[in-house]
Length: 400
Image: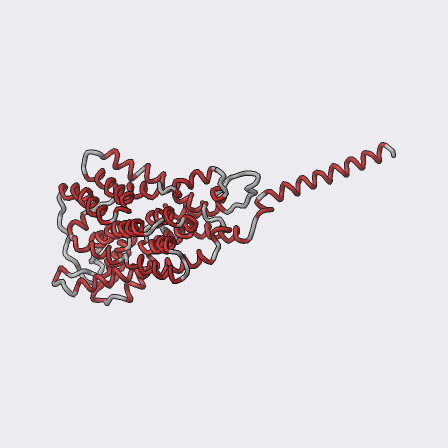
């Protein structure tokens, strides 16, 4: 064999080896690992970002979740490199799985509640305490959806977690799911936050369907001025009462009312600003992104996820209708300027402050000078408390 022949054989073999190495490398990249489900989920993530940017639907939540969905659905070979959420299920540790531990352990939702408490003014509720009933009435969606979930084949823990979507309270839904049905957490979280973002789309048709033009034009008595003493006492008294009623909600309600006390007591401004500012922003980023990365196609694109989204829509609609109808029921016993504009009943779901803004916008369509925002904030913040109490009751009575 001549030298030139040997060189040709060596070069040919080298090229074949390089070709095999290249094919092997490509097989381990996202291009080689990609499945149709990954592309569907990436498209869903892009849609959520579009909704946040173009439609201004809960951008602080939908942008982190949307990008997290994209990141969580970039395909890779888990045998070579533990990176994503699926490694949590396999018992491996990765950077994304460390982020996700804040969700799985139930740490992030109470910290969100701390920030909500530090940002919330309960004056409207203190000024007109009977509006607390509207926040309670809107929670009917939680319990009816729980029953519907059982009929569709979910077990009791899963049904309880799905039902919380009706409260339109993302952190509470995540907290309950993390304790009762962690395998459904991604679908429940995405459904809860999606419907929170779609409040301006879902609620108005239901509000108009259940009210008359005269009711929508109804003006309410101006709220009274609430003293600083009342504001300071409220989070303490409210926590004692609600925690005794629903001990399972101590974590959420404790952080909510603690944050509010930091805001109202007047001597912890630095702590209140940190709770509602830097700390809250960091937790929202990590929570949203972690929830997004947990929606890998192989775990998310299932029939159970479709059922959860359908049940979530029904739950949210029932909650909205429950608040409106209960306001109309209360008006049977009220007279004159004590009557309630039923539109604010829709704010009983705890999507703060979006559902209160919807009541304001709908009311002004029929009377430009009729401002319902401050009145609507009362059932709105009551809804936050109500959904947390409902979650606490479920956590207390259902084994998990």
